[in-house]
Image 1 (cartoon, rainbow, N blue to C red):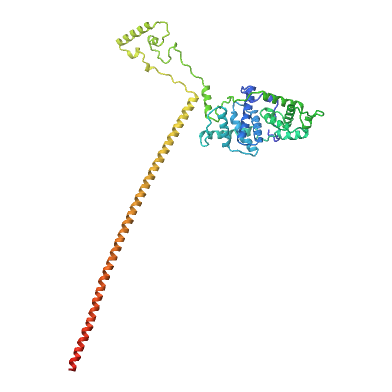
Image 2: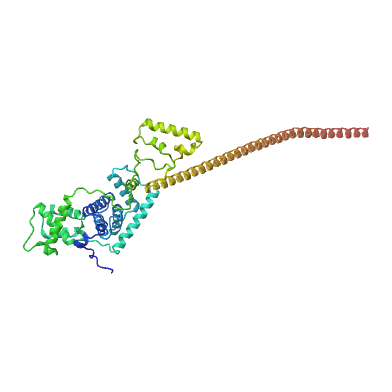
Length: 450
């Protein structure tokens, strides 16, 4: 059946006594301690993530509702608390990233269990497994609640009730603190928010000795009854009498946010006891003579001298017969039976092999990088050699050009010098011709007159 109302998730005392955790063999004290521990994780993580109080309150209510239908044996309380915070941050419109939630819970666990605080690498295999489990647990939460995750807190009723009752202002903070503490109990899945709010107001008024109207009773105006108010006060008083909650490993899935908790699996495995000195070793063949076995058992009835003498006689007899290998037991021939390995040893071997493979891959990558660097250096050296050869060729060609230019300049200078002398000679010859021609004509004219 699908419920569409928002206030349908309330259980009776008989249903809480017959919870799935009780069916799996968890007593009431252990279940109460784990519930308080999970709520403490949600509250502390919300403070570290800087979330409003409404997100922590919603996460705690979702946490209680989930474990009313599922057992602490099948679902780890730490993983469920992280998923409740992540889901509540989205429901209250103050979302946080999965990476932030996982890092905060990892750090809280390291501090609570006195482990060295290490940073959770977002690119590691451990982080990928934690994120996948966070998504899976969130789907379980939504599935068990039928995707009806609406939560109505008693905090919003407290201010109205106190304003109507005209109580002093210091009573408001005390009632608010009691309402926050009530979320660590199962009151949110047993009573409506109005009843819890009235019980909180009544407890705060009794602590500060503030009188409340009794005629008519004030709780009837707020749709509550006296028995519910008394039960709320009793549960809160029992909560304050309990010591600080600590983690109890009852879940079958022992993995947590840190890798060091894998030692729980190894510690739970029975350690095989070594055989006593009085018992004969089980790995010796049946054909071994009793006199040889007597040397290993010093606590038998015979004396040491008799045992040694019997062993020497047996050795002499074996040498004469030539059957040394059959009669004399050799320590190296004793076969040891394979000891079955525990789950933790298999896990450590698998993790060691994975680490070796990762180291090999890293070494291969480093070798490839080195080869690439060498190739780059060779290419750079080749380029530098080519550049130097080109510069030399350019220098040689420039020198040749300069030489050719110098030769051209020299030839021009020589041509100019030779051309000037020839012009002068030509000029002188023409003048001489003119001079000689004019003198010859004058001589002719003289002869004619004479």
